[in-house]
Amino acid sequence: MATDITVTVASAKQWSEFVDLAKRSYGQDIKDAEQLREVADCRVAVRSGTVIAGGVGLTAEQFFGGQEVRSGLLAGGCIAPEERGSRLAGQLLLGRIGPLIDDGAVLVSAWTTSNEYGRKLGWQAPCPVYSWRVRADDLRRAFSGSAYQVNFGISAEGETLIGEVCRRWNGAIRRPPWWTEWKIRQMGLDVYEFRDDSGIVSGVTTVSGVSKEPVRELRVHDFIAGDAAVAATMFNFLSRYNSLAEWVGFRRASLPPAPLLLHNLSRVRAEAQAHHPWMLRILNVEGALQQRGWREMEEQEFTMALVDNFTGETSRYDIEVRKGAADVSKSTRDPDFTLDMCQLASWYAGGYRSAESARLDGISCHSSAPSRALDDFVALTNAHEVWLPEQF
Image (spheres, rainbow, N blue to C red):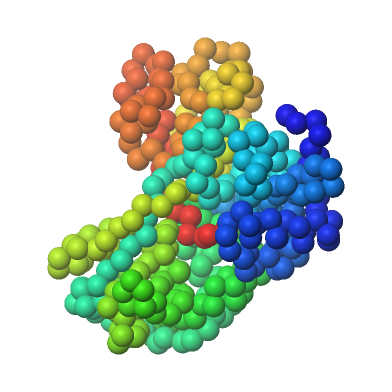
């Protein structure tokens, strides 16, 4: 850790320097910088009075197992190009996470291209992330519209629906009150609500117009559907949105990981593109396990050994899960399972859809009946699939 570098909360002058640095580092403006200044904590790394790195963070609730878990969200992390390779990222990361822990965060999430570096520090990507592109004609033939009233704009009911749908997935965020307006403004989005025949908002989608290069494509940023019927209507609406659009493109992670396209397109020629994923790090093991929701199963007790990816140190925990809640305490018992912090993050998020996927990822089971024990262990957290539709 460099002793001539200080990580500190950004002053007004340092904030301006950070915005300029981010533009130089990313090669583009941070359009939402000023509003983030009002709601986020900005930390900068300073050497000899000059900002050489920085990033913003804020606390919010992420859903896991249907319950809200206090989480830190990191965004805008950047290092001056001339400083890269100096191991500054780790020092900056510690300085950014500390204030989030003070604000109650028991885990932290970030979208990052530095996946290898993140794994060295115990971060893990719980799921792959894709964007999708479908020919408008194919989408129109596959999905017919039902009797929903489509309204331009977002209402309080629409915001409530977004929260209700996000609760059904692991990793989705409960949007802070300012989030939707900020997202619409900074991305220049148009938002539409879909009301059923009783007037209840059942779906919300946002679009940002039709691009001309390389093809004419309608870009979709949100696809929040309460059920299959409104999802079909939303697809049909998007396919007819603009007669010039040859394609309908769904921004990375905007579509939930349900087989909507696979099970409905007459010719499954949708195009998927993989993107860098979001990564999760457990900051407080006991707090994170106690705050999340759990599958309602028979009471389970087990001892888990956790290996720190960075230091190699091992901690043990006794965990008792009953009636959808968990009791957690430090332990000296022999472990039933051994995980590193990366595997813990994936298991916690429900990233293992089966015992076999957990086994192939290297989770060790020390039970006398390992197949059954690992089945039950994985089933505890995967009642909800992983989906983080928000970009930050």
